[in-house]
Image (cartoon, rainbow, N blue to C red; front, side, top):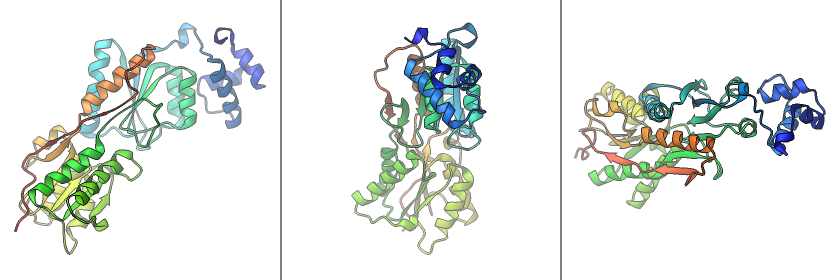
Length: 334
């Protein structure tokens, strides 16, 4: 039985010392990979969980970003804060330094803190990290998964394919036939889905997909600027660009200014996210509204339910997106 399992018995079954088991339980990195895997397997098999006051789950949530940058991250943090404040739970912010998966030092600190749960934003855990959290019964939820996390992993996302399609159809209805797309990093699921929605909209309205008009970059201003310059210097430049984020769209604005192009007379631009800045730039940015704050709120409620052994109605949710039509799109110049 799980209650009768002790560190000493785990050590005996694994053929290691008690200090070695303790190191594994605390996420220490100075344990051989094979030894760690053996101990983790025994911990999982017996459902071992230390119950002393010093290691009981703390009233906190770990919110982990691959990178904390700009309004996009702020909107998500605010969504989490609204829930944890009402619940009397503390919030701990972590950053992976641009990596899609946190380093081992992070998992060590989490296992030492023993939070109620972990929320991963635009990042993921490797199988060993997942196993370590699951063995300690620390639930985690992924917001905007990087890849296909599987049906058993709790996640909150949005209708990225529909968003990409919606943005492109808006431009097609205005009469654009040469529409470019700047997607996000190719390894990210949301980016691929948005570009897939873009290509489907082109095909469904009778246009051929031109690979030369599809670019990829990080979801930031510099990436949008760089790829927009390349697109707008083509011999037959696009009359419209669908950006993978509002920040990329701001980079498109910068490129258009440098080349003496007017938005929307010479170039229509559609962003993605609907950050507060989208309404204040000139011209105001047409964009796809992604409910970032609501996504964060739902992720927080989901991880708290899992921490409290409350069965959620669904483990995976994709929220609807909407067009926000403003002044950055118009009919193409004749």
